[in-house]
Image 1 (cartoon, rainbow, N blue to C red):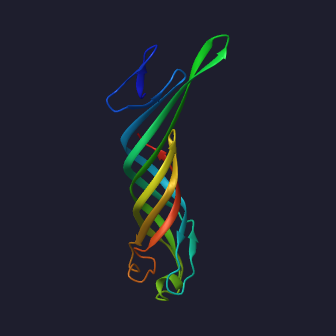
Image 2: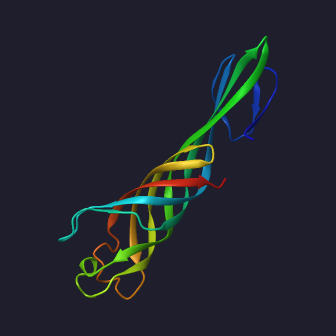
Length: 173
């Protein structure tokens, strides 16, 4: 939990900063180092060479580390005849780096016609991500790059080329 609360004023740990406080509402801010797991179900790759822009949905999973600022809002509500309860809302924003694994569909066109078959290649993804979180769940936008690790890596037209993605994830801390 973020804090301990007495009757009138919250007593916070050294990592929490009171942002606002009035009779019915308290907002606390907490900066932290953030660790997440996420997947990018949608990647947009710009047009390269003769290939038009691509919208990819291949498998991937990444580990994220970055800076996060959480906001905890505590509202006191009267529910009946002077009986009060507290409502907690936690949200946050962050910016950080990610790295992970995935797969990408290979065919002659994306390998400069050096093969005559199709397959799914193992990829390593890396990049920068900006996130918005609510409780333990995150979503956001990422700017990433991938590279394949097999013998066709020098022919792949997307090797270390940028893509933009939408990700969803789970906050680990």
